Length: 345
Image (cartoon, rainbow, N blue to C red; front, side, top):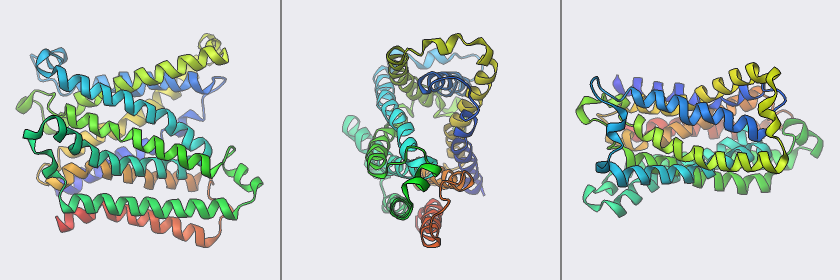
C-alpha cells in the first residue's frame, strides 16, 4: 500500500509541474527573461527553502547542515545544479519550437534516462566505497529502457505531426514550430537537466539522519541544486535584460500584482514535482528499485501530463488519427514504465 501511495504522490507532483506553464500565460507586459527569473525566485529559492526547513528537527538549524563536514558534497550538489540550470534555459526553448507536449516529452525523456543512470555512475567515481553502481539493477535498467521507448514513440508521433501538417497549421498550434531545431535543443536540455538527479545523489546525505523523516530527507539537497540553477538562470536573464533593454519591466507597477501572483503560482507548481518526489520516496523505502527509479518515474509522468495539456491546448489539432494513436501508445508505454520494474524487481 505504501508503494501505491508513494507513486500517487509523485504523480500529483508531476501533474502540478506539467501545469506550471498555464499561469505564465496570464503574465502581462513582461518579456520572457523578466518573468522567467521572477518565477525562478519562487521556484528555485523561496519554495525550496521552505521545503528544506521541513527537514530540520526542533532544536536544530538548517545552517548546521551546510558545514565543513559536508563541504565537498555541498559544492558538487550546487555544481550539478548550475549545469541543470543550463538545461532549464534550453528546456524553455524546446517548448518554444516544439510546443508543450512534444518539447517536454523529448527533453524530460532524455532527462529521465540520463539522470537515473548518471547519478550512481558519477557517485561511484568519487565515492567507490559506496558501491552506488549496485543500485543499477536489471529492473532499473529495464525501467529506464521502457521509459526511453515511450519517449521514442512520442517522438515518432511528433515527427509524423511535422510531416503531415501544413506550415500554417504548425504555426497555428505552435507559433515558432521547428522540429529539427527543437529536437536538437530538447536533447541538449534533457542531457543537462539530468544533472538535477546527479546533484540529488551527491546531496542525499545532507540531512539530520534519523532525526529527519524519510519523506523530507532529500529536500535540503533539492534546495542546493535549485540555488545552483538559479545562479545560471539569473546570469542569463539579466544579460537578456541588458541586451534587450527590458530592465523597465520591473518598474511597471501596474502589472506587478498580477504578475507576482502568477509567477508565484507557476513557481509553486514547478517546485511541487520535487517536493512530491521527496514525499513519495518516503513511502518507497521498502523498494530499492523504485527508490532508484523515482526520478525517472517522475519525469515519465511529467511527459504523460504534459501531453494531456498539449491535447487540451490543441497542439495536436489537425493531426491524423494514426498520429494520435501513436501518441497514445507512447503515453501508455510511459505509464507502464512506472510500474513494470516493481513487478519484476
